[in-house]
Image (cartoon, rainbow, N blue to C red; front, side):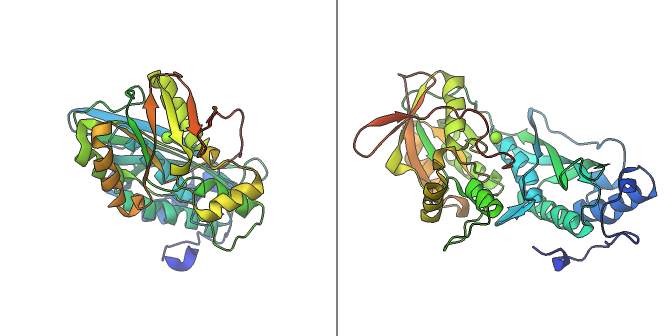
Length: 349
Ligand code: MG
C-alpha cells in the first residue's frame, strides 16, 4: 500500500521525518497524535483523550494478551509491521474462542523515520483493526535517538470477551483428538526471509498475515465443546506450537507428513534456504484440536471460509510419548519434531 492511497492530514508541520520533539509530550506530540493516530483509529474511547479508556464490559470472562512487533523489514510482501501488530494480538485473543474488542497501540519511533512510512504503518493498522472489528482505544508514542532503535517497534495489547461456555485451552488435549490447520504453512517466514535476502521466486511468496477471529467463530459455532484447543502457529512455526500444546496437556502428538499443506513455492524456497516448513513462522494460521467425532465438521467449517480453503487434518493426539511431537513419513518411518532451540529467524514478527 502506498501512503497516498488514503487521504490524511499529514505531513505534520515542516518536517517529513520523525523528530525527537514528536515524543516530547508538547505541541509536536499533540499534532502527531491528533493528525495521525486520532484520525486513523477514530473512535469515541480514543477521542476522549483521557489517560485511560473507559470500556463497557459484559459479565463473564475477558481474555487479555500483549505482543511486541519488531519485524525487519517493516514492509514486506503481503503486509507490514502495522498489519502484524493488529492481527498478531487479535489472533492470540482468539485462542480461547474470544471475540476481540479493544486494542492498545504503543509506538517506539526512531528519530529520522519518514513520516510517510509511519503513516503507511498506521493506515495498515487502521485497516486491519476495521477488518477484525476491534477498536484501538488507547496508545502511546515515544521517540528514541537516531541509531538507538530501528525505524519503528509496535506493541499491542488487547481485550476479548468470552461468550461461550466451553473449556478451550492448551491443557485440554485428549488422546484421539485430531489436529487441524486452516492452510499452508511457512508463508510468513519465507516471505520475510526472501525479502531480506533479495530473493525472488517465480511465484511471489506473500505473508499470510490475517485476523482469524471470524474463522475461529465459524468453527466454534459448528463444533462447540468438541473444540479442545487452538493456538496460532507463529514464531517457531507449527513445530514449536504443537510442542507447547503437547507439554501443557501431557500427551504426544503424531503428525502425518504428507498431510501438511505447504505451497509449492514455499517448499522450493525452504529447500533452497535449508529450512523445514514445520519450523517457519505463520501469521494467519491457527491450529485446532478437536474430538475425533467433530473432526470432519471442523474441516468442512474451515474449508467453507476464505481463510481455510487449504485446511487439512494434519495429525492426532496420542497417549504415548507424552510431551513429544513426531511426524510419520510416507514410507512409515517416524521422526521427532523437537522444540526449536534458539532463534532460527530473528525479528520475524
Ligand atoms: Mg500466539
